Image 1: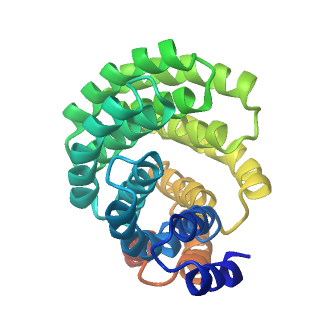
Image 2: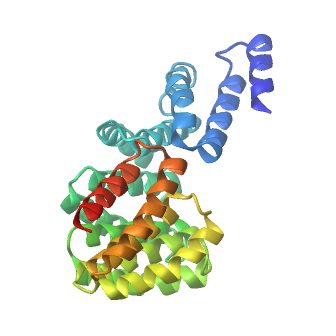
Length: 286
């Protein structure tokens, strides 16, 4: 729809008309949902300067576009750029929209997530410790944004080696996710994925193997056989099978998932490369 509408608006109203700019913003939001971060990032990079020039940097629609651009910048891998954008944006969101506005809170969530993803796990955990009470107070414990933030906080704790904390966070979170969103909602499945890694991290790969074997059918059914999370879960099954000493079965499982990763994700995707590397190492040992 917007592919046809925007040229008409630019011709009739001009490229800098507010209605044209808002239509471009709506198009970018749809692209981010349907084509992923790469599909919308370029559109927003060209749009945001125009919105700042015409509407002003502190206009509500401009702030929303800047927030989405910061999020997509991080999701396309430029964590430094995303964190710089949030450092500039968050004070304005807090002042103009208010500290309890959902856009402000979601921006803080993204900032904390990208901070941890950049390698600064301590700061990421502290940002979540500061954020979660505000989410509970402003949105409620069962709000999707609150549940997503709790999910990420638990994952960061796991990545940080805080296994007891991560286990407690997931034990509290999973019943809330299941009750609020359902057993097969994406967030519930991702939490189950992260939780399934914990026993192996604590020295119990057999329990992790069982949890992932139970999880893969749900991932395939709800997210698709070629979804990244589904392929990663199958990769985990192969790795934990290897850890338990069944090298021939681990090679068979990894060969299968490596082929599917190369087809679905591309040969240069990090997961594809890692799967091929492990497969080569295991075949050398066989």
